[in-house]
Amino acid sequence: MKILVTVKRVVDYNVKIRVKPDGSGVDLANVKMSMNPFDEISVEEALRLKEAGKASEVVVVSIGPAKAEETLRTALAMGADRAILVETEAAVEPLAVAKIVKAVAEAEQPGLLIVGKQAIDDDSNQTGQMLSALLNWPQATFASRIEIGEDKASVTREVDGGLQTIEVKLPAVVTTDLRLNEPRYASLPNIMKAKKKPLDKKTPADYGVDIAPRLTVLKTEEPGGRKAGIKVGSVAELVEKLKTEAGVL
Ligand code: AMP
Image (tube, rainbow, N blue to C red; front, side, top):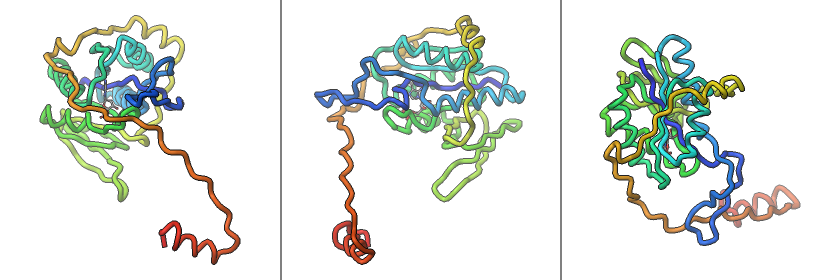
């Protein structure tokens, strides 16, 4: 079985982002970019399934600028076999990503498609769900455990009340949650080897997908600063303030 994994290049999670002065978006100039953390978890899971003999090939795909090749090379250095870069310098919304990945899945015919639960830049949490609808494949979102059977997968999902285990027929779309695994680091020899692994370059037009945006960003703002706290003199005063000022009692 082949596993297709989506990988997005995003602002590194350690970076304190800055909003552009005109509020039109986030300033990406000279900012460290990395693989979306949920996608690292997806790549790790695909590799573990391959190592356990449940998969024969791991193919990674990214839609993004030429520099997204670096992100794909990181996935190849972790152990993925092959990469596809669908190159565009434009920002691509989840629906367009889902349409492109659908076309890639139709060409590659994977048995399993692993997608991150959300990209930490736009926090959309839409791509996997849209992909499943477009492909008409079952979906298992927010996976914290995946077990592959003959022609089905058992997936434990993180839901509000705890854990829920469901069974889906393959091929299916699974989206990964934080507790699924701890991704490996790529070793230096593997980083060198990854430079020679196959990486196919395509464009959205090759898949006949129109990536024109459908959403308009009205404004982007930094979160408001936190107000300073106060010290209270007694429990009675605390209870009083919680009642009258905070309105939580
Ligand atoms: P989102 O729906 O934007 O929160 O993204 C959810 C997941 O979809 C991400 O974790 C990625 O696995 C995948 N994804 C979103 N955008 C892209 C992209 N441009 N290239 C590859 N994968 C993507």
